[in-house]
Length: 283
Picture 1: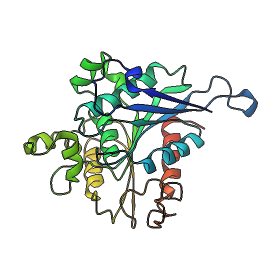
Picture 2: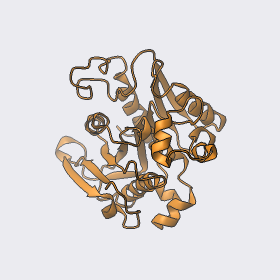
Picture 3: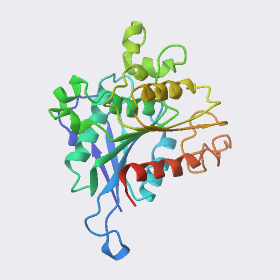
């Protein structure tokens, strides 16, 4: 395995300059004929976006997540995208640029260019879902100078994602992304359940019933929109657990906090890995 770290302007020089520099960390699985993977194996890719309300990036939702996807045999990337005071569409452009870069460099990354999955948690879930749902936004192709299809992920893995503005919103995430005191229609444009269409990729969704920071309705509203457009999805609702569980084990919990360790919820990772394997026919 190799570890690489790239400033996002190395990924794409046309990305806007930001107050908070952004970078991507790549955990690159190497192939070996000696252990049965062969030299030509192309692996599914999971691109992870940690949460943090677009105010900061949670370290608990970065390495602990990507390391498990890497252990499953996938190429795993973590995008440390720009947060406030950098505003939309900076984050969407950064995410889209990484997806396109992986597809363009699939040979070097030993990646399957038809099996690129975005994964995100909380506000990072909003960004991952935005990448899958808003991939046709003109600002992406105009800024990056690539065919929009290069930026479309093949699937979304969303944990307790911020999706909707309004009654069930996590308002801080929208304020950090778009600024405070905007007209409601500005926030509603990024209320993602209203933006799903027939080109949205399949999704793996999970949430806890008791999440009081990002209400379960966020995930349910997205699932309903996916169903309305006949977009396949897998949905898991766990009965207990606070917001921000990440992989829900000792690797992602806070020091001295047992509430973020939940063996039942931690099963989501095994289920997500199985879902990617089914989508990609990867063994």
